[in-house]
Structure formats: C-alpha cells, structure tokens
Length: 81
Image (tube, rainbow, N blue to C red; front, side, top):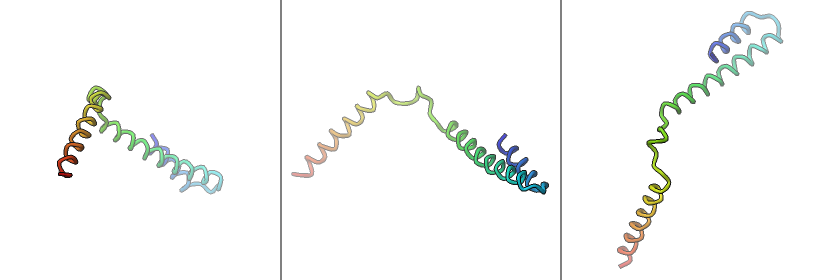
C-alpha cells in the first residue's frame, strides 16, 4: 500500500505543472517510502521473533545466572592458588 502511495506521488510530481501539487507529490513519495521501509522491517521482525511459549521463564534465567556466577567464582578460586 505504501509503495502505491509513493508511485502515485511520483506520477504527480512528473506530470504536474503546479508547485503545490508537486510538493504534495514529494511528501507522498517520502511518506510512502518511509512507510514501506517500516512495513518491511516489521514483517521481518515478526517472522524472526520467537513465540512466547518458547521463551525461558524468569526463574530459569535466574538459575542459569546463578550457576554461571558459581562457576565463575569457583574458577577464580582455583586461579588464585
């Protein structure tokens, strides 16, 4: 839809002799291209995002952090000897 708006704006700029209509066409082109860019980015983000059921719970994440901290402390304790 945004691409169509950009194309219509480009046609307006190309065929008009009025500066007001040309300005409106430029705004339509810029708005259409920016909107199309955001639309493509949103669809890519949506296609790459994980489902909420596939994500780890906060409790599991905290357990992973705690284990990493214990392992780091044990490794630091060994390197001091």
